[in-house]
Image (tube, rainbow, N blue to C red; front, side):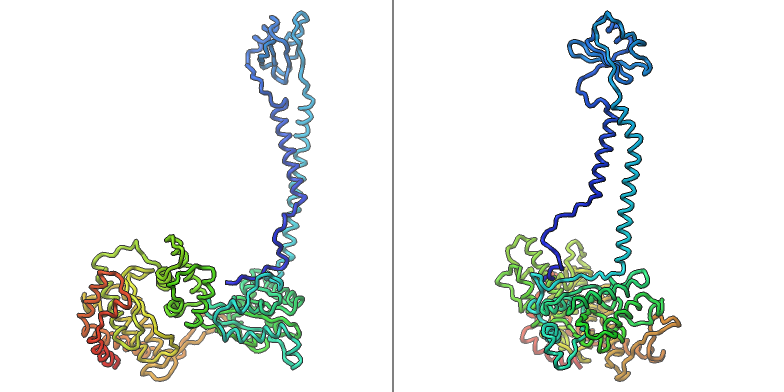
Length: 630
């Protein structure tokens, strides 16, 4: 994937700046170290070995002329013999040469007193000046910190946007954005306007104020915005919506003003606000009412985008996956003139995205990208990138030099279904129940025309599931009929019905399937008007309190209608259950046969599953499909 151009003024390398205050700290450190050394070792280090003796013994040996020299050093008396041996004894500090009797003129020993002036000097300096020096160092440190705090206080209301220059060596272009052909076409005019503004102004056209990118997470909204900046070759200001709002009142609005002022000074340019729903939500629904900090930030954005200044040559590109919560004033023409919808990629676009993400990967010649694209319906661009990355990790883990098709298949299952839980041990009874459960899903789906073909059946635990039945559509569909909804409900209930049919009771493994089947029935009744209640949509609308707070929502229908909706949902689910039980009873032998094979192999592929339906039985299957679909 292409990278952002380098930020403005980012050189390859800059040596760290030397701070003068650091030199002061170094000097203070070595000065204190020297003072401590003088205090602990006033006479320096002496490697001569000294032997302690009593003072009386030393004085007696002095009279016997046993020593060459005697030195009075503080509270010690140090004596050295002709052989170089050194002895010392402790004395009273008040006893001098006379008091100790070391003044005998008949004894040739040289007696002296070591001067303590140097030690006294350092001791005086240590006691008098070191506190002053440490106090000055503390003052310097506090002033430095206060200076930093003051500078941060003045820059608190400044914009935190990252600026990317137009002279970066690497920049993203539309060639780096796979798929999204229609979305890119909507932005070509914006790019051309930034490149050749006079061509449009001559015709009286105005530059679009804003472009709103709407799409699911991972579909490439941010990548598309970077491509617009790279194609237009203009400065690109990038910021997240959450970076405007702080706990202090007025900071968000101040940052908005600063951001747009910087953009105007660098016009023509682009401002990209990611996740704009963080500050662009509808006003009047916050606990703070009109004084809410987020709302004040939004008001400032509205003013900057369409205020009294018209000729700014600044385009705002925003991205969100929640356009339904944005304020109406933000969505009107003059602010966000264009709304670009970025859908999930289709099979052709997924193939193009895969080709982009394999540029730096080594694939085996047996890897079929078209097959991978067919196996990944509903995958976004980010999912496909993650898929190939997981495959590369798996290949490297197994010491392979190329990514094999098995690595791709395992990664698809890992991303879509979850990792294998090899440590989760199932008992033989649980394995048998899981096998019949999964085959119940697959068999009902195979016999009903509205279900997708079975791609794989597994009783190896993955994610939170003990087993998986994987349905893969042959082609992408955008419309769903009533019969397809009912067939899918039967397939979901197939596991529950198979457990009841074979074992006489059900387990907790069917709870997720029943929830999904119930959700389909409820959506058929409430959202799509596919029930006996008629073509009526039963929805909910937000409720407001006296402070304008969005506390919750209330239904737009009466309690009597809510009761009828519940009854209709229950009826649809029970009809699907009755239909599913009949299909499994009519094919009980086939259910048992496939389940036993699944218990042996633990995994059945599409080919192995389809092999149970021979041409002779396929005719029966076709007739059963007609009966089952009625």
